[in-house]
Image (cartoon, rainbow, N blue to C red):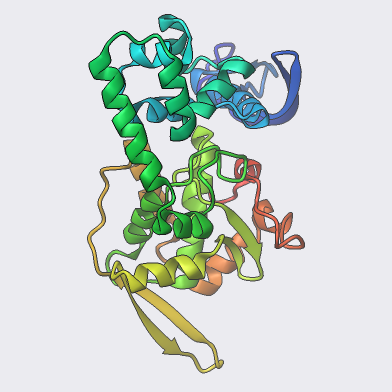
Length: 331
């Protein structure tokens, strides 16, 4: 970006600040462009969004307030139009629409919307609502009852155990954990001649953390931990074993002179990009390109330079906070 004062290229300046939001303060790594000659700092639209999202993401997490995508998803699971959903919740039409568009609900309304995600609680709300359209009401009741039956399915329980509960936190990069999307990321990085397990772990880490650095959200909502070999997805071995058993991946084993055994994964199913945004696909390609020629040892050494690893290696049982993404050396 050019300086409005001198017309010269500016440098990126990052500084931890406390920003106020709804009578509270939140720590934010504040991004600006700084003019080297004048010392002036400028905030373009991209940085303004990044700085704002850091604040509101923490606020939503602290007060358990759903994100816009979650609010829409809750409504859509019952197949209700927005105007009907607002009646079930007892909110004004415009108020509810603004929440879906990105306006942050009050704490009380946020809890109300969060409760409606539970089909059993939603049924109670539905019976108490003043929806006068019997057809829409009966359809919503049928969908809620169907969800209740599916709620305790064994597969969902196993998947939640492996990949984590569907809750947005600083440890998921404020994205909802999405096992299917994470699986597609694995397939993307396994295309061609396949990928070694250790390198795959780093590719996934860099993709999620790089996207968070650029956009304030992770791609998959995966949680990562620091181990001796670098940052890795939580429960990665169980995840890969599950995909091999289901026929999604093939695995081959190679014994090395050092005595170690390497695992290499190849595709048994084509990558599907339908659940990704163009920006997410771009990041996946950039990560793959940047790490393409690095050996497993080199990529481990690279990951050992990241604060996400150095600041967390001595607390291996704790997930890595995505705030460390802002200091990634690769991007």
